Image (cartoon, rainbow, N blue to C red; front, side, top):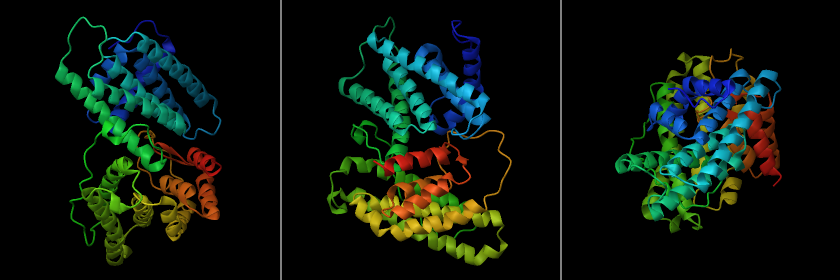
Length: 400
């Protein structure tokens, strides 16, 4: 499918990179319900979406050239500069389209909004990304309150397909909103009913032991996914001052999540005691990394619906244990050859997010400073997370 002829060769090249490299990975991470071909249709139907896609692809290409945004590299800097030009073009087109909306304008604006969130987040601009999340939620709230926007149209689109794509986009915004609500403690202006998502569902049976590190990782991943959904719903009860004030079913889910996260270490400890001598150094490292993430998740859920500062203060030994376990992992981190492609749209991490949590939530200055120092030591990237960028955000919050 050819793009508009009124584009430069560099823009054409950028869109081709988006189509071949960026879109397949983005679809897997954020658009599991949208087909690539449908998203390409959005890009061809809207100049705003097209320029946003080119901007995101250029950021992607910049990271592939050099993974750390704080280090100078002439070729990488050129891609970054081009991305900024395309980003500003996209924003200008969005503003122009809102002045004289046509049928489907809301939908196209939502797609552009999601791309804007990714562009800002990948550069460590958390506040700017949050602005776009709020804008997307406001569009959804307006639509659900007033129905379809009455733009100019010469044909009637399929209402069912229209509704389904809106629900798909709402689901994507929900996932992005969860990441910000959990990791950055950012609240949107809208209540969570604007983007309802599937419940946390803590019905899985707790294992008493595991047969492999992989099985332990899979089980922890399921628990953490449920925790993210539960924490997202917590926004609706932010006025509550204690767990006793929240609905019984939500409180029961919280307690089950705490129970499973608290029991998980016992199961992996039993496995390590039984099979530890047979494990490779890599498996031992992975098991320790999983334990660090279990601790970070437990801190999150224990602080939900509570006086967070009091909870963080009481959990100071857990923050210290996170640093104690993470420090040797960083010191012994193998200097592996970089992968052929860096996956920048994958949010789960190994060490950056627990260290970021410690740097922003610990109530002891010395502990926060040590976490910051560890993020800055031998800068590295874990998928969408850049250790230096996250250290910068944490340091900014420390001085607020």
